[in-house]
Length: 567
Image (cartoon, rainbow, N blue to C red; front, side, top):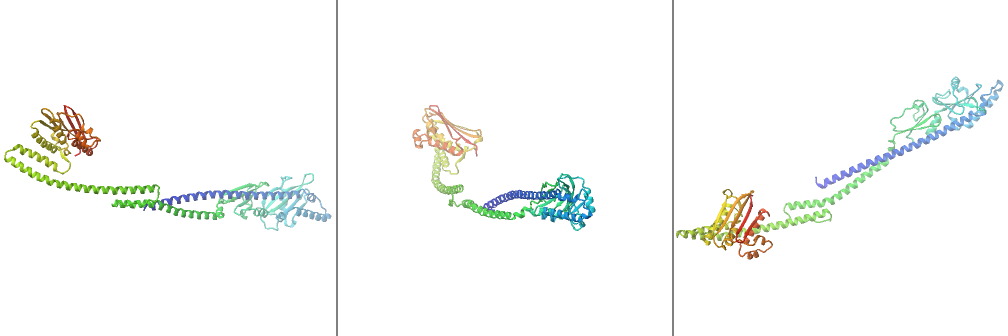
């Protein structure tokens, strides 16, 4: 999978996770807000229903109080009608009926199942005809009412109606004392209300149809519920409805309980959730397109650089990328182009160097031809000197042959110490012929280091200087010592003489100076050779290596060379 696809996949997953998390958070927050709002609405609705119920019950209490304190009613139930006063009784009953009808609202009158009034003299007045009342039950009920509150309507409970002409099973029973003008108890009033009276109050004023409203009395019996089968039974909370609220009713110790399920709010707000989901999907699509555009813009230069690097790896250094921006990617393109250009220049230089080396190799091979003829000529001279018994000439030619052969060899720039000493010995023998016993050379070399390797011609310039510029100008004989030994895993070579010495150090004086000027300053001293050896050692082995030259005028010169044991 390419980097573009990986980036696209990772960023898409990242944003998708963010959107999902944000969506979940928003949904949870909105759910909480909806839950709080829904709970508040449910509480407001419950409070409103409680307020209406209190008002209706207060109106009920006021109506019954008016009847209980009415002089007409008190007089009617405490009058002893004789047989010839039956007509007057009928007239008084009509007055009471008119009074009751006038003070009760249509709602209350419609749900009034029975109204029974008992006077102090045990005279009775029925709201409904006596034929529809179970008189034995009434007598028994009213005889059991021993606790009276003269100024308060008393709730007796819920039970079967005492009327025989109705099939209602449940009615709500109340009682109140009759009070005369002197505020003395003048009788008892008993009446029954259909439970439909409470149903009309609670159902008609319920704003939220999803709330379960239940009216219970002080004993926990259900007076109203949306399920009629629960009326008259002990109240049982619905565990599936998670929100429960309870408010007291000021009359009779009743309570109204409201229950609802918070999940209902989703049914009311499903459009909002669908809209949010659609918005998230649209946002994800937009982000996906945007991510692709951004990745194309970011990854394309990297892809171009990758293609360019493959071409460079395959040897095409002429590739140049087009810079499309000035940001970090643009800088990367600039660096790539600079790298490719540098590679191209290096390859061109290597090709030129290889060509130059080939030319040098050709010239070197060409130069070997001339020494070949010189070898033949020297061999002929040596042969004639041997025939004529000129041994010194034969030996001199042989030493010259060694020097010439060593100078013309091209098999590398390193030789063994034994080979280097062999060349020095040949050179010294030639110079001994010239100077005829002017100097003596002593070799102090450990046998075990003869096979140590060092750069070719490391000793020759110093031996030459010791002979020409140290011993030759000196009066009398001179001594040259060539010493070789191992120290600290390094090969140490020393060339020292007891010649005339010098006042300056050509190595120190040559720094920053033209080589020809150095040569002229030291009057023919092979300072160029000395400098070459010093520079070659530093190039081959590092700046810590080189030539150490010590000289005192009139005493002599000492040259020390150190070579690492790398071969």
